[in-house]
Image (cartoon, rainbow, N blue to C red; front, side, top):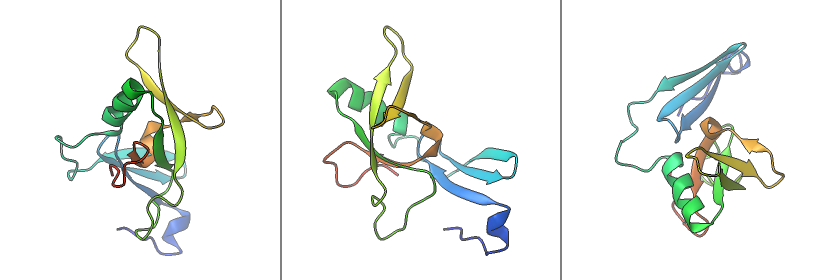
Amino acid sequence: MYRPSAASSKSLRICGPSIGSGSIRCVSGFLDEMIPAPWHHRDEPTVHDLMERAHALGFPLDVVVGTAPGWTDPWSRAERAHVMKETGGWRLWLLDEQGRGVDVEDVQIARLPGDRGGQR
């Protein structure tokens, strides 16, 4: 796990792996880049796979959004997100409990309610 020093944390923020794209998001000033991560296995479900499943079942997802949580309790900042799908279309998106959009690229970990493990 990357832990920037106090000096470098002001100029570079590593948000961590995004389960939606198999990448790491790096933010520094005006720079906001997604860098491909080779540890993402193509046979593992992505956040999009979980969104499709949740929508089909009519369930919300538990998601952790933003910077990576601690290793001891990765679900400490979990929030509910509802999966929406355009009528007759294919596009899926997430809305939080207040109805605001959730950027799928910012999802650190997600699971269906009641699932103990979750997908990282």
